[in-house]
Image (cartoon, rainbow, N blue to C red; front, side):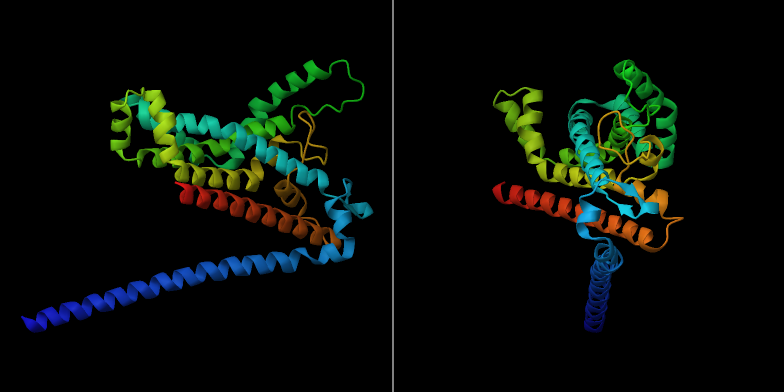
Length: 305
């Protein structure tokens, strides 16, 4: 009997050591991967800064590689404007939908809505781009002609413009926002809802005054994932945005940081190719800054909560 207990304890200790080793190896691999990616981006993206000049890349607007002009200011502004507007539109829509699924809709309608959202999450980005070309761009072109039918200076885009790109981005990031936010809302303890009802609050008041504030950390995580999806998207945006380097005005064809890399990497060489790696470095820095800022906000919320 004693030998059996001792043998069981030894087996348990061996299992715990093995599990700890596996977890440590996975953690170390993750750290090494992040460090390696960061080092590679810096190594690949900095040579062009020395050859062309930081100012000539980051603060110039002309992108003509054949003439040695590599200004990406409009491309940076387009990525910032497009991502911010898409996220600002998607957050309330996604949050309200998640709240409805978590707190109000039940039975078959809830199953149908969740199935539709899961389907949206699984659609490849290129399909979103094709749907954008077939549905969104023609409508944007009609709107463009309505606004500029008397203009002699406007360059018509056929509907491939910033607005179309933002609409596609909103549709693409909604499933992530909805799914993660709904999960966060459903983890809120039910006694908080019951306490709110006992104090005389209505269902809507309970959702907005109790449930959503209690789930703010999970909702913030959903926003982080949505921002990452929006700023990193390339294929769908390449198809619907026009892919021209212009000021990010609503009816201008525009180019994002991601589409700048995707559209020209295959045939680039020399300094041109190095500048594309610099664009990748700028994109990498943007994503890092966004994640750090949002994590700081999340941490501050946890401390205050």
